[in-house]
Length: 148
Image (cartoon, rainbow, N blue to C red; front, side, top):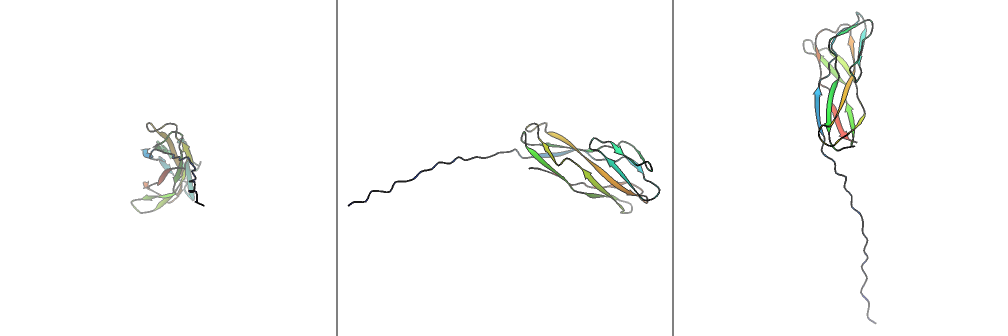
């Protein structure tokens, strides 16, 4: 008896790809705590809200134009972007003393458009100033933005 050829089986599947624009991440404004005269003893903690409002203890004096850092991120509309900011030290170039910076930032932002103009967000934080501090302190703050 002759054998019949085998029947081929066929199944279809669906293929998907979620395509997102590469992120364009830029800095628009540096962070500035203004001028601070700390308390005569101990450590003075000065905080700035993401809106730029300074919180200065009664034992200290805060003056000048304080301002939060402003960043802009562009990518795919409705993309959720995770923001990571590392703690860092501000360093006095004259004597190498440091002041600790602790950031305040959104954990995520949702893009409200694709590409230009992008979405702005602010970063602020606090600094702990010892009574012995004097001079200008400068530091680099590492900020990372990535799709969640």
